[in-house]
Length: 121
Image (cartoon, rainbow, N blue to C red):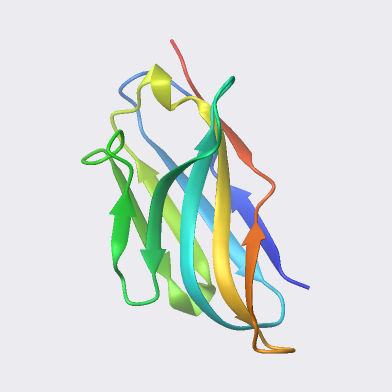
């Protein structure tokens, strides 16, 4: 009943910028936290950034100062502004959300389908 739809991935040159969006839709009562994770070839999925309903953020050390996570609660959407991109940022980026379903008010975790970000010249 809940779906996370991502957009904004693609190919970008080193030093460039990219903005990812993820919109949650369906029978949602409220969203607690939303975040972005990524998985590079040969690597395990890792946390990139998260943001709570209160606006508290958390970033991986590798992206601090370069990436900014934000959310629009009215649209149930989370964004990831990625600046000064490096080849090491190349990965599949996954949207994640912890939310209360309107049908049962139970906390449930959802994942997006993943979107490819490639940083290369």
